[in-house]
Image (cartoon, rainbow, N blue to C red; front, side):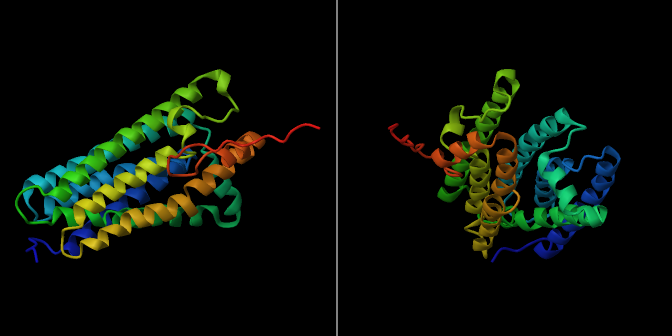
Length: 273
């Protein structure tokens, strides 16, 4: 059992307070901007902040501690900056998912959205569990599992950046307006960016696995997978795509894997009589 300089529960509590204050402040910013989609930006950047807090306070072997913290920070910075450019590039037009929430929560919108922002703060701390476990590992030297985790992280970061870049390039071409992106990885998965995001979280869980109670690190990839498949990821994104692209997107759904990149199906057209 590793000896912690500071109780891990206390470290997590500090991170929770920091995140709640951060999201509360940016809720006020969102109100002024009248664009609540900025929560995606803050959520992404918050993980880098939490990783630095954990690295400063946890008592694990320093080289591993700062390696993992740096990886998390790089992932957080890349995703947050990509989302900043996307969200603010369309401002004052708000992401369709949040326009839909305005309709759903019309009766008590401010209260519900404030609660939503605080839930995002809590989710950051819960999902950061593998960071805390990995950063508290005291064994000296990098292990085979560390090497595997690092390889998975590099693959996931490259795949995520490639998928985002392909989608951005597709959208920049005015000729593609109203069309479904099937460029590169998007011909193999309807949401390759989500898949590689999930793979990043799985790599962090692998870093955490050798720690005492390391299996708790699976909370993060498990939680992310649930959110992506059933809550705010694929369901809301595809609802919006069906509203704007209609039958073209339904055809895409029939042919292309929803999540894991895989060979697209060939749909046989009925023979004309």
